[in-house]
Image 1 (cartoon, rainbow, N blue to C red):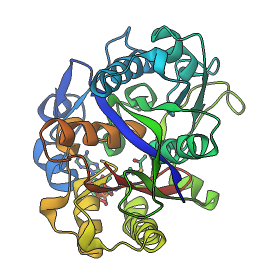
Image 2: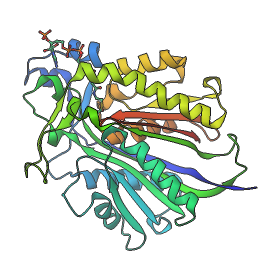
Image 3: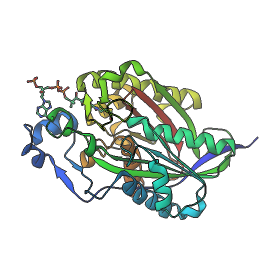
Length: 325
Ligand code: ACO
């Protein structure tokens, strides 16, 4: 029996030109390069120019993914954009990206699961493709988190940055085993009881303002490693694979200490872990495709490799996807 599989055809990313170093931030708030690197591993973050909205970053990442796939926007019939920093309350950032790509066909919508947004996006597109309703999807994670930060709050403003990444998924066929190329398993979770640990204190339906990010960093850290292990182990169990089969672990790039502690708990050697948080900070939904694009471009991730992506984010939301590249 053949199964429909969502096969990864291409991957691309985009970072705004302006990089802001820790040293530059230390001139604005009471912090230091050493404190930020030691607690987070972050060395710099990219900040969007005034005219660069989330959709503009998303369009550039989508174009890079299409070029990498050897496809054009004509070939795409579904655009899913994961973002917590949409250009507007509506229309969706996905429809702005759709127009920016020159598409007047297909369906486009946004998806909001904060830092887990890209994993939720992969799971959503995978279900659309496997149902047979759509054939090729762009899954985009795009964010301008710099616009929801309190730039006087040193406990949050040093952690985040702007950027976008995208993959192209195409419906193909497989034998239904873990040797198939494509999305092999997705595991999604949420628990809204934790909303106060990580949230934005505004929104159209509550304050009619955008609000700024608030976080109990130590509390988020405390939950993070356990949540990562939960969804990663569930993905292995669902596919009959083990940590030994894994070629690459590509976690949400929030904090190097969370990444290394998670890898250690799961028994994944650090040589198999893709870390890019040092270069762009936490870009929320964009961080996993940014890391995937980096590791594919530098030759680490190759066709046939088994790749685990995972993330945790506000809500809390958390999730994983096991991919055969
Ligand atoms: N520079 C210098 N000192 C600082 C800074 C800073 N930027 N920020 C906080 N401090 C101070 C605090 O005020 C505190 O001082 P005090 O002891 O005098 O009160 C001290 O440093 C220690 O603060 P903690 O918050 O306990 O520091 P901790 O070691 O927990 O590190 C951090 C903070 C980096 C935020 C850590 O808790 C963390 O990484 N948490 C996870 C956050 C995260 O990854 N969130 C995103 C995940 S979900 C998503 O991606 C949306």
